[in-house]
Amino acid sequence: MRFLLLLLLLPLLPACGAAKKEPLSPIGSSVSFSTGPIVVLDSGHGGNDHGAKAHKPYCEEKRLTLQTTRLVKKYLAQLGYHVIMTRSSDTFVPLDKRVEIANKAGSEIFVSIHFNSSRNPTPKGIEVFFCDAVGSPAKTSSSRRLASFVLTQLIRRTHAVSRGVKKQNFYVIRETKMPAILVEAGFISNQQEREQLKDPAYVDQLARAIADGVDQYFKKKV
Image (cartoon, rainbow, N blue to C red):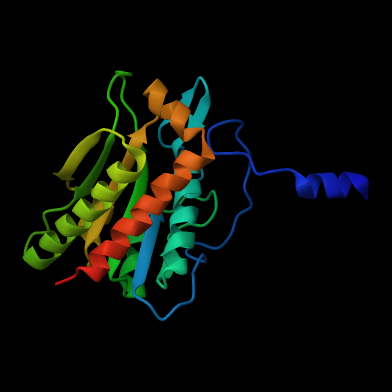
């Protein structure tokens, strides 16, 4: 009994540190039930797709994205948004399935969360991407606005280097029907940022900033 209580009291390990297995759950099952706008959050990578990683100290993108996305979901739910996650555990979800989840949900926006990496350890900072949607200037304009709001809040809360709002043709933000952005929330390959990502308080600030940016987008929607 004492052993069981000890296990229950052990804190969860952060995403940067010793890797741990996570239980599987159905794809897209993480939903906050609310009457507010529907927001789909996409946690990059997962399962056998590890994403970027560094071993000194150990840090893995698929775990950082899930850790951050869960927190974004919590803060958006507190603000009254109806949140759907494309994955809620360490599972592999194909890109087309992520798009399908967002399109079928009737989501008003789509936010994909990632962390950056480079062979050169010098680059650092946060950047947010949107897609120049062919034949849909409204989606392009709204995506750019969403990206700007989110990046502004990320820099305000973290004081990280701003690498700007940029156009890119990433599949998940190109094929989704609604305004969509992809956040690169720091470089795992940069020692300074990797050390910050080991700190749950810093990851919490990233999540709060993304939620704040989304909230501003809806409040200032024209």
